[in-house]
Image (cartoon, rainbow, N blue to C red; front, side):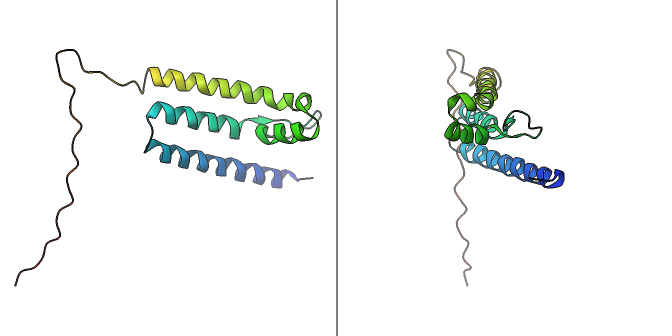
Length: 135
């Protein structure tokens, strides 16, 4: 069994690495996808990785619900995994609702009014040519 300090260390390492993974995926997807989709993926990933659950009845420590649900599903079945699946389903639903609300408010694309052309995207400047010394 883990002592209190080793349990705390293990949880800190897990949460820290999950946060780094979520930030990296958010950064990488943010370069290729729209903000609404990135928000949905990042929030769903955070809900799946960071939701806690009790491993079994009578235990006072918590573990990541995705891992608990996976182990309980493989060893006991769906009925044994339901205590870990309930918080996962709830948090995933909350992530989808929050991402939907953010997409409809903060990340909403503004459209140009009728009769006015949309502003063109600014062009990036080409890299300056290398200067050569003339003798």
